[in-house]
Length: 262
Image (cartoon, rainbow, N blue to C red; front, side):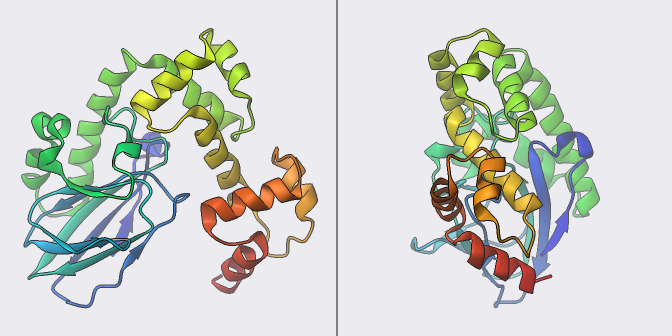
């Protein structure tokens, strides 16, 4: 699997792309966590594949498909030659692209032809006719995404502004304060987030707050209480609870494992 970076102007929406091309029947599972990113969109450019998401039963997929934002483990097995092009969205990155909230997908795997909105827009057709080079695939998808994003901004500007503010505050902003800055009610803001992002603004704040911790986490960190307060947590217990909720590990275990991989 080869990772590719998105255009700098799209990094708030797309975490990365990756391509996978081989005929090896022993492909390693692709691991994800809730914190890594949001929904995963995979274009299958060759033979059908067998896909297992978390502990679900294997399914055979001949076309393009989406894997929900809550999936933690994806196992892909080829039935022949395999050629995949994947778009890995950030937790909040899907909202300009698809009005169906990612929470509706949960950790499920859904074939793209079942998602009428994207199927009707012809994104699969554009990708499949783009040629097999990663550069051409990325260029085609980013052109499609940019047009989609510009159309979205015309009618969901408050969501765009809200995400920008949350990101700038690294998740440390009360929802009432956020709503006041946008001059809308908290209830209206939450409804818009549910429609476009699939998680309430408070949940997105939690994700950004902990992502900021992970980005700046020192392998020799020992003052967890001070780190908790500096990142807007009530206390060390609150911080540890949030850390374990999103990563499945305690801060000490996570930091030790990350240090050993460097």
